[in-house]
View 1 (cartoon, rainbow, N blue to C red):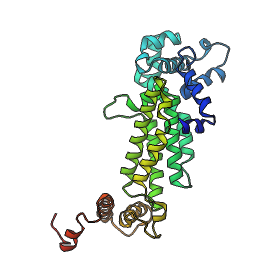
View 2 (cartoon, helix red, strand yellow):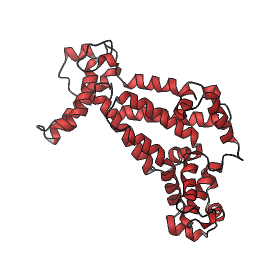
View 3 (tube, helix red, strand yellow):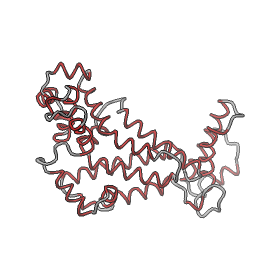
View 4 (spheres, rainbow, N blue to C red):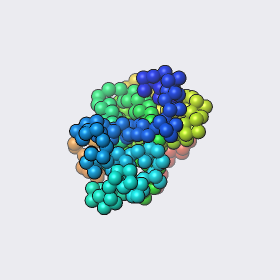
Length: 308
């Protein structure tokens, strides 16, 4: 919670007060990024002093966002949205196709501010610092918008995902790849991104559950500690970057990951088949980082052309 308070620019005590207010059903209607974002519709171009005078599409979106924030995914039914927005069910289907289309749009709008902030940091700069900031932003977004976060990350949709979460993951991949090019990654870009994403999602869901039970203070420092543990497992020490003295981490895997990331942009003399083969060989070298210094090395030296 300490990092969430810092991210929000308030003290921990102020943040706890805000959290207790968010948990009060009488006060939390429309709270969070999704509520604030969609509430802007009422204050903006369609502001005529009454929500009923807004365009039907916007009333439907606002109603769905409010229901989601108050009761979770199960509360967003056709009947409930129709009643809250003052429209017929056919109007929902005409604008959004079906209820899943409506939820997709609610998710897109609610995620918009977070995604814009995440994309803004996807530029030149220290990729390790960006990974830390991105982790903190992810957890803070989940705590501010628990129902929307569960919709985005736990809604069972076999073979599918919300487009906005896919865009956020692409930002993560690009930052991790920059870390690889800088010689800071000890495993493949895909593996490192998967570890960071799954860990941040797990701790966010844990904190959301604790927040709902008013036990968030019991998990003080959890997100920070887990973030540093995960980054320590995927990143090579700063003193062991490519071209600098080794201080304990095995340099070959670090160089292999860096070379694989660099060759996509800078190698033009190899055929696609040769690039694929080189990439596979580099992946094998990169995967050796987790092995103990003696595991397999003696055998490899004695029989360097072992049949596979």
